[in-house]
Image (cartoon, helix red, strand yellow):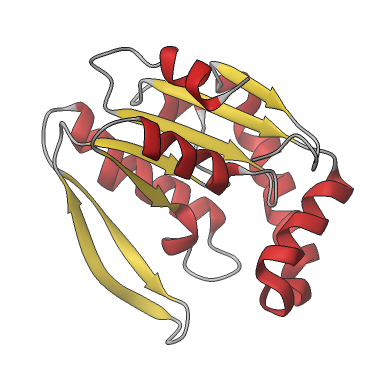
Length: 178
């Protein structure tokens, strides 16, 4: 599915799109393409929120409680950036309730977060392609943590079933990803 076709699936009054999938599947690329087409939208990446390599579940819950639930109730939402260099929480970011946002990252899509959003997208890609893409993108920063992070992904997926919460499932290979 082309990004322009995906844009047509977003309701006119929509304010929140969630993009999830395992590491290296193309979530960030798709979110950036969608942002460029969806006027006035902003990308919020869970990579900026995870509190370290063991923070996937925490970040998913943080986004649900602090960002999505308040916005769904018509109030500003917020999220706290994680400073990876300092290994500590950083500044808060506030997002108005009607601002169009695209939340992307492993853990963005669960049944609970989907209930607070307008569209959920799950991206699948073969494991070898994903690893090649992720390590090409993040190189030596991610390489020593690949297995640890993959373990957290598997646990999270088994607990939250994000694919079943998706409105759209994109199945891609390295050649078909943006």
